[in-house]
Image 1 (tube, rainbow, N blue to C red):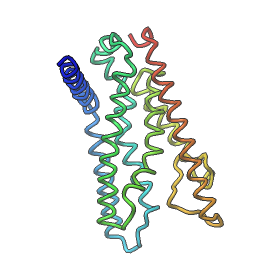
Image 2: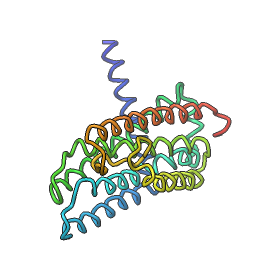
Image 3: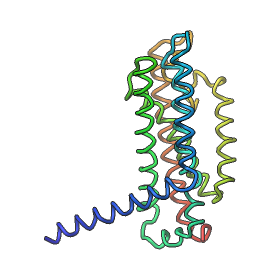
Length: 239
């Protein structure tokens, strides 16, 4: 009986935490970024549908990445400031293992929502524009999206101001975009498009480059996450 009560208590606490974090994620201006992602997607997809040129998966990859970045931008950049503005951060710091019980749940919810919406976008594109492996395309799109999303979270824990964090992340994103052409065939390219095989590169070599790129992005994403969580332990900087 005790175990059952404990289990239901855990479910009750977990559900309340998820509902609370969903309210934080969807608060204020997130809805505008969500609508912006849908509008951007619909606009470009209509262009592809009515275009005389044959659309390719590699052309749509950038569309999905940009939509994903719009979805994760606000909750990862402004999450800390929203907690400070709502004066809930003092309460959150009073929870033992704050970083694990709150922000890990929030990050997980952000990315589950982003994954679900991107999966819908890719599926619709596969149905309306050109056939593509829906799960595979979504999987690869998540790498740069997760990388920049977690990087935004880490930067927000250092700057502790949403507008300042947004400016820094826009600068970093532009920097990565500028380097994209220079690093087109490099494993260090953040926006590497795995579906666009460069000229004079064998499929085997390109496959190895893609795998190495994904490993690098995953490792750095984990390091960014750990760094951001560590920064959240410095209570005096946030209160």
